[in-house]
Image (spheres, one colour):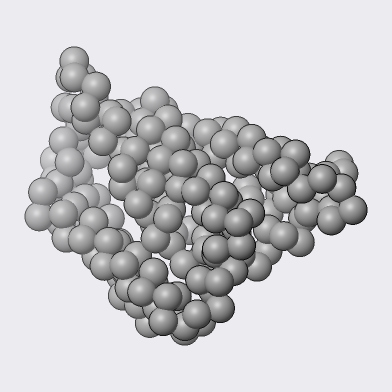
Length: 205
């Protein structure tokens, strides 16, 4: 993988990670509870999901999935349903900033599972890994080292972006600690997740 292709790949995935959507919103919400460190489990969850899709792409499975309208719609509806479930959960049970001072590591690492499930069930990511990722490969060279380079680049970029977003969420957490702001933020976030789920369900391939 030459330097030019790598730079194009890096710029593309950073824009993808920063694009407004459920992923950044999830990281901001988790960061509001745990500060910058809240981005670590989110980043690892998103990266684990991305690496799963990347491995499936290398094996040609995501291309088959994208080619099948039925399989694509199943993944789409699973992703939409999960977003709606996340939104309803946030609406009914707002998170507590006090968890950030707790001794248990469980609340902090609870950010891994939703990030992973969000990554693997997002059809936009499936489209990226099946249709766009191969465009960055140099087919005249060995493919597996290029996949390893892209995987390592994704993990590092995801960690930097997620920690930055979580840090921003952490600063927001101090403002949210007053009055009813936290509940309003949780319900607004929940409503946006539900809206994202409904919009995802309406997307046509």
